[in-house]
Image (cartoon, rainbow, N blue to C red; front, side, top):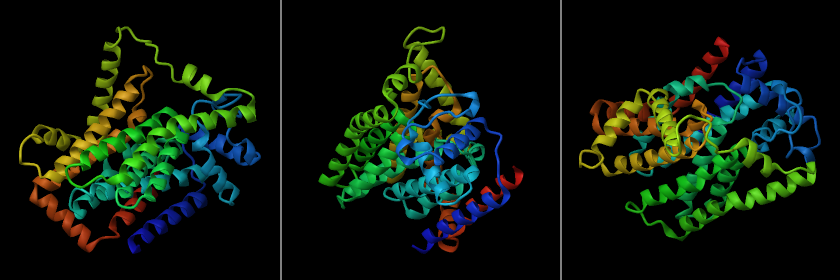
Length: 377
């Protein structure tokens, strides 16, 4: 609990600096989301399910690119008195912390805790983390929701009430990123499949997975009814039609076009998860042998399959962007880190030393990186 308290302190410190400096960003997505969230905070709560563009990015009318989950937390923070221009930054910073702690908690179920906690030092240094260090968008929110959902399913194996945490994580992912939230039950199923050879899944784990599997359908039905009640228009018709259309816009026939998309994203993973993506490739080459310990092998299987599921889902669309497979970068990066700890004595010794003498170090390191980004502007 003492170490967790340090993370709360550094988040508060970052929030104070953001507000004091009036931090802004040139990122177009972030500026649009901040404008929408700020305008939403001024409207009645009963209308928050239906944000509008309100001129952001030159748009007008209802915002139906995604559900409203990205805008509601910063609107609440703004209502609490925090500056609206920085509210979404704070929410995404909090999501960073939640995501990294959830991933560490999952990894520690399979590998030594010191090896798992080395992720807190290493993953903030992969290229994609620098790009999204202080941004006001959906990527870290989705990652946090997915990992909390999987962690909830893991804990539900022995304590059934954790199924509620799993459901909340999955629901948050769905409200933030829509159809991409279906990765939550998919990843949870992969996790239980991974865990089956290490521990009994238990009734609680299966119940939690069942809840997650039903959420996309139940939440979509409830959201649509609430949305129509407020706006008189359908959210689902637009979202699953104009927004998430799967029609090919390329020159290759189906399914070669989707395979090409997947290869494009795989190349992005190698770069944006570097240098640990290289170690992950070494892990893949050795998974069938006995050189990799069982726990590290199990983590690699889960993380790589979860990354593959992310890429397959996203590759179904022909609109491509690096950020669409955001969870895959951290999952693949984690495979490389865990593999390095299991194979190279110096890396393992470093992990043990950092964990023993600097348990609060990752939080201070994270704050240093965030403050550096704020100073650079």
